[in-house]
Amino acid sequence: MKTKICTKCGKRRPVAKFKRRWKRITLESWCNNCRTIYDRTRPYGRWKRLASNLRLRYGVNFRYTTLRDQLGEPDTCYLCGEPIVDRPELDHVIPRSRGGRTSLLNLRWTHHTCNRGKHDMLLHEFLDVVEKILRQHRRPLFLASA
Image 1 (cartoon, rainbow, N blue to C red):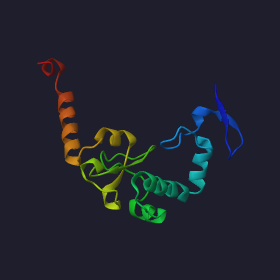
Image 2: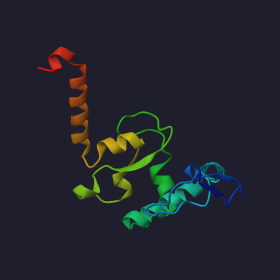
Image 3: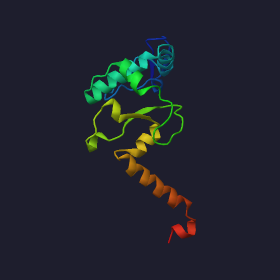
Image 4: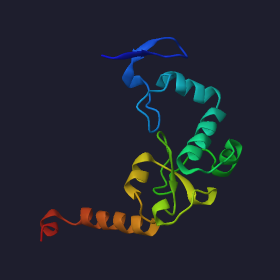
């Protein structure tokens, strides 16, 4: 098993305990435990990283304070309405592939699974697909095969 030493705590941990850097082969220098503790004790650290990721991925320059004030904490998913417990993601309401921009008006918090399910659909298209799946699911099995 490959291991790596965390530069924050100095402990040797399995490589699986380190996140991969975005679009890189290398791993982060802090283990997941140290990153979580850092995020909890210094909540603006997460916002700074989010602003940095938006700058790297989409070329937009948001101040982390603006992001925090405008988007707020990721408490509920705008797609399903359930509370977000872990793995919050920002979703483009109008996907970039459909001409949507990376602006604060077009970004909303979602669950990881909801965001992956929506993919590049508009909101009404996504809701139509969900309704179709629910109708199919509610139909008895002997009728569904016909």
